[in-house]
Image (tube, rainbow, N blue to C red; front, side, top):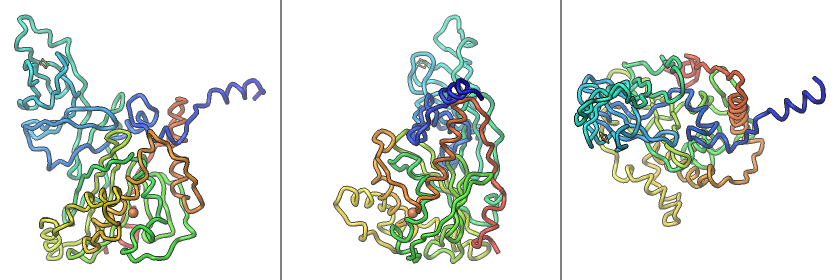
Length: 386
Ligand code: FES
Ligand SMILES: [Fe+2]
């Protein structure tokens, strides 16, 4: 390559920084990258047939509804007529009728009725509809351009004989803060002392894999599936089972300063133990436990001390501790902070470099790495089913 060609090649290189990983809108490179993957948007059980609701995902608003057939659909947020919010309308069969003047759209977004029009022009009106599917009790949608990629299944979670707990919570922090936290294992002895792993790790290793990244140095290893999924062994919840669980958690941006935490935790228990565990999970939370994130907010406001979080609500306290640390970081998408990463941040640094490499490739129109989850991430670990 001549010096001139080299200069031209350098000039053509997209300038990508960590800030680009934090932006989620449709016109940002980070948002465009995330939109290349199916994302969970709702818990299936929380959307009855015949109901519609608004959802905000990656800084955009959409309408989610479940048709009377039982199928879930995601379409544009606004009616094409005068722009009112379609989620206020009525579900009719698998179609959605606008609340304002009654225009009706089928699940493909095609307008099929304009009741007040003497000469309907439905054939010229179509709102956007997004591929939607359900899996493991979650509703997923694809928001990218073109055809959706094949939906990747995770057989290790398809075990009806075990008990799977699903949850979705909103956290007021950038989704990437939560992603970072998963690969940042050295926070565990300090932030979660009740877990008993009090020894700080000084030797951690992190490496890129076919599915994303893996961090070792802790038992069990932590797996990260690109672009926004964490997998990890989870300690038993008190009172239910003594078996470790395995978790898969999606960190889905609502916008640049808040995100949805979808978590599946599967417990390898059967028979009476499974029954006891199901009953424990169905029971109302112990007094105080439901308010832990509220307590975490009070800690951030200086009205309470983190040490007062009640450790008897074990798993939830871990969540509250993480919440305090992550929300405490603040809104890094709009107010970047001058961090100082060290050797202990090896997992964090690795994932950021992978993300930035992929964003650069996308910006430059080069091929992206194709990610594939292995089917033995759980069963290969020490916490796997017997
Ligand atoms: S705004 Fe929807 S039908 Fe008029
Ligand atoms: Fe944590």
